[in-house]
Length: 251
Image 1: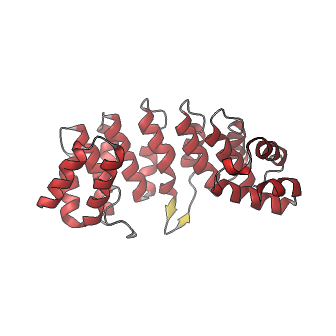
Image 2 (image 1 turned 180 degrees about the horizontal axis):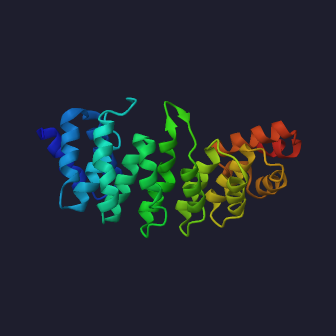
């Protein structure tokens, strides 16, 4: 490795805060190229879990912006076996993120097999990233196994896992009774963000039953607490339904 790469790798491993770690990983992504891929390969083979996690995180975004990702086939060939053998939760979560961000459908069976993993960080990685496996060339191509995994994760005991799963279900083009039922189950979730993602997902699907719930929610909280991306979905719903009461409270 070059002196710069070595310095950034060691700095990432010493980082005490997540933002410092992510800044160094982003710089490694920007260096990119074959040298960086080989560095990530060596890290993934390390006996230290932190180095394996860093190797996976590097592979998750080499040369950002290039589609398809560079070294995609070689990266997936390294990452897929790691799903089966990695025992450290942090490293496994990094492998999950990296595989999902490569957006290859052949990773789906291995990833959905982790949906009940005992480690929160692994389930969170799935909830936040798994949906990328259904996107090719900017187009969503839904997969039933991915949808089923997100539905299961939307009922997780950890709020942030539920939140990400609901967000990705809500934003997906997938519709149907099971998806709507999962979103309805979260429509009164004790976690505010999860609840709002579920309601936004129902509004995006123009569910006839959600109008009164949305009105009561907006009256209680005010539009300012909803989040701009959620308000946009609710405004579109209110306009299409001709719901002037809801529209008035949102705009």
